[in-house]
Image 1 (cartoon, rainbow, N blue to C red):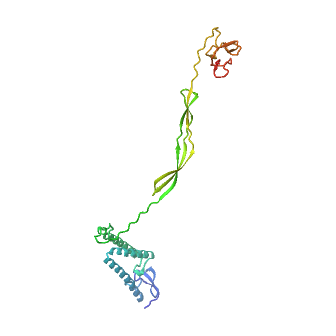
Image 2 (cartoon, rainbow, N blue to C red):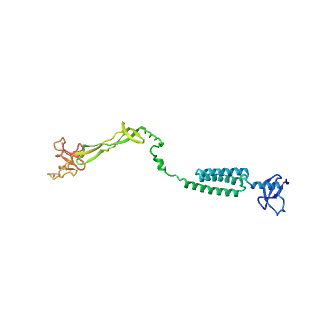
Image 3 (cartoon, one colour):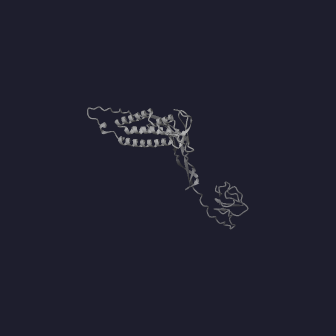
Amino acid sequence: MTSPAGWYPDPEQPGRQRWWTGVGWGGQRMPAAVPAPPVAVPAAAAAGATRTRRLGPLHIVLLSLVGALLLVSAVGGAFWAMLALVAIVAVVIGVVALVRGRVSSLGIRNRGIAAAVIGAALCLVVVGGSANAAIHPVGPRPEALLSAPEGTSVAKPSATPTPTPTEVVTEVTEVVEIPFAVTEVQDPNIDVGQVVVTTTGVPGQQTNTYRVTTRAGVEIARELVAQLVSVQPVAQVTSVGTRQPAPPPPAPVADPAGGGCDPNYEGQCVPIASDVDCAGGSGNGPAYTPGPVYVVGSDVYDLDRDGDGIACDA
């Protein structure tokens, strides 16, 4: 029996209208504007709606397959593991239905049913996984497997030979410091009792090259193959004074004639005159003074010819 195309009361959702194409129900729905008078649902549509509520061949095959898998797993002691696996498949189907809006072939007609399927399947995953872990805990190997009775051959894993570590030879350079020497010299230009560092010591540098052998990262041998002095050390020289200081000048001798002595000289009286020469020298006076005479001021008579501060000392 056929009916013309048009809007008819939705047989699956009361209070809404659904488009009838003349052959079957379409996907368009709309709320009923006003209470519609009782309209006879097309016989073909009613039959189609009735068929959607019954288990089709696909449903029967899937349910049979799931039941067979659970039965076989129960016999083999893996019921909960198989239940968790089936629940994971149901989660995937629910996610697909949630994205697409429905999966009519599996009876999931809207997103609400898809969300319910996902929630129930996740609960089964948790329950199945926990039960399987409780039934089959992971533990150490039983002692029966570790010690076999006499006369029973137990296959033992062959020991893997430990690889022999290889030796690695490399060259390593090290820079070391060469200490400087310290020497002392006698210096007549320095007074006795004085010590002066005349040359400061400087350490040198030497580069040593070694051939190093390591095994597994540990040094087992070291051989010196080359030495090179890159900076020569400089010895430190300390000068020790040996010069005796000059004796203090003698007290001036008073002039017997009472003419007075020149204050620029000490040790002997140098008379105050127009000119004074050293006694016994080549000077012609008129006054003379014996030596030695120490110049303590200005050498007004030019008695210290060699400028060492001592006059008439020859």
